[in-house]
Image (cartoon, rainbow, N blue to C red; front, top):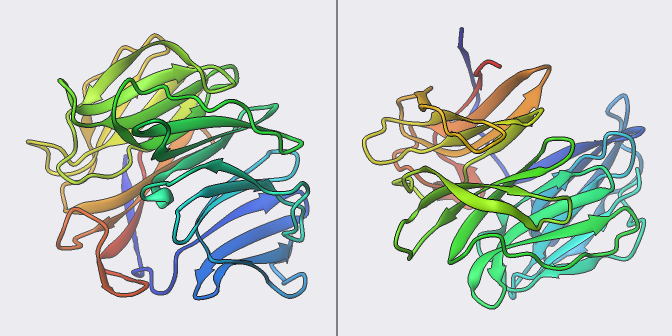
Length: 294
């Protein structure tokens, strides 16, 4: 069964966090840039915050047994950088520019793939599309991959243990929509992409999680849909019938996998099916967390 847990509306500034071997790192977008706060296993601060001047849109990817990766963009060019971080938030290796001229970088993604990470952003890679790159554990960047055949946005990544899974939105094509694709550990495409659903009425990400070789995607809201839909995709790309899990106006959905169940979070009743602010840093709507089953 499903259980919705309403929580207070997010008030304040964009933030993200990931575990380290000895605690946590928290990234907050502030006026000066991106602030990194290191916490120990009890939640106590481990010194003064570090600031990456002019940075915003933090995206973390956890390493189950080592240093997490942080990706961020810079103003005004919107170039995206990556770095592996020590427990205190300092860079283990010099940060590197992964993408140029990103668009809506907060809707990119990053995932641990065993020998490093895959990172993805919408950027200028010869055209307005998504770029995927491998980041090794020593910070070395691999080749830029462009798995979408045309114009694309909102890359979301998952790792099965041997392959990556990707969802993205394709636009200005003969068949616009949300697509699912298989990638190898370097981000190179494996086979042809599969149409997952029609393009949502609100342009936003389609989160994906992997349990073994199977994947779950959280799509929508699209034409004829009242809200978000959960879609199962087999290892061979067979798309199951979508199951609607919420019928209210939603935005900015995210999904994680824990203990064999997927958990989704979104903004609800925001008045618009998009990212809405009533003042800088104040999100409108009600934040909801819901267990959506295995």
